[in-house]
Length: 232
Length: 277
Image (cartoon, rainbow over all chains, first blue to last red; front, side, top):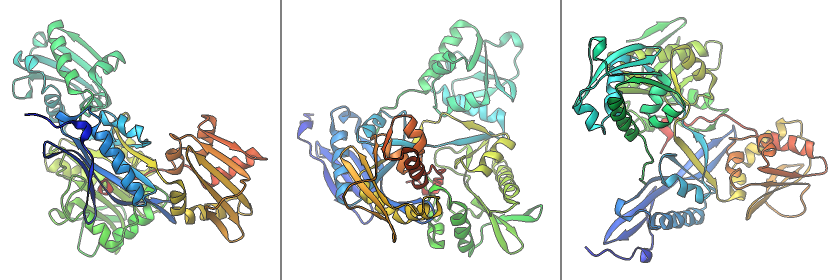
């Protein structure tokens, strides 16, 4: 299919009752968009500030890195200014490539979402989380590797990485191919995508030993869990 | 079923609690930056329908648990037991207590109650997704074996696009800060400049006014990256000054910095998940 020239794409505006949509069309469809609406943020006891709350930022994967999202964002910033908002804000992730775009428009990280997590059923949680984290590691799962996972302070559990899931098992010590030791904080941060497995190893947040081939496959799978996200 | 802990008991949300819960919330977050002022209807509408930011009290009364002392509502926890992002966990997303000597115990009991409920629903973990600049939450997390995600990549980004409009919005608060400070008798003009934006704040007999022009007694220049940090109360004047992100020209610079600290203090942030967008 012949694609329209992206340099000719001009952002459009559609006003709703509460939200305003700014978008760009190409090939007769919406390829990049965001919405913004009014928000009031408390500032002390007497004050509050009007903010244009930006949400739903997205660009079709085939139309990224062509300056379309930048044009949509620039147009939206002009519209928000024209609408009389003295400030703009949005929630995002530093992992998202678009975080750089937002910075170019003067948006600054003013707060980081802090969260704390408690494991109510550590054994099940670790199996479920590890299962998600190695979801991109078909090879290590095919290998049905047996892993000793020592997450402090919960103590070691032995798990088998299988095709469909990670199962807790009771294997003889000689069957354990890899031993992984790390703190619960590190495990949760790895699972939450806060940093990569590669970083955790370099920062010595993880200790591991065992079969080099399995270690390699496991590292590959865990590294694939985290990475810059080319979305928005 | 209600549970009793010390002098208070915990029960699920009941119709008609909104008024007391909105008042409790507004009192609790008064010292924070971020959350909107809630009317009883606004409080209710936050939890009307299940959304990615919050649970529905219509579908699950247990998502709002209320601590009472006699007839008085003294605490509240809002927990999403079916968060959109993960079926295997629960998220505590609002936690308030009345400001008295029982506050820490009330918060602790509400968290313990949410943990029990999450476990009975087969959840493997529970998260607290609210401000840890709030002393009660920080203490509870430490005492109850929570692991803090200190490097979470999720951020709230903001920009100030109209400096004069922004300061106009918070003029009453700025006035209040000035009146409560040791600088209440100060009279003069502060010129605030950041890139192409600039604004005057003038203190007169009648109070502080925003706008106008004329010579400034104190000239403040702020780097573009630092302006949102200063105005959204995320960095103090002192911090920005030592980082060279904020410059001050005045006859008495120390006193000028003190005045600016009084007008733009750093305040803790509290953005409850239900108020995300």
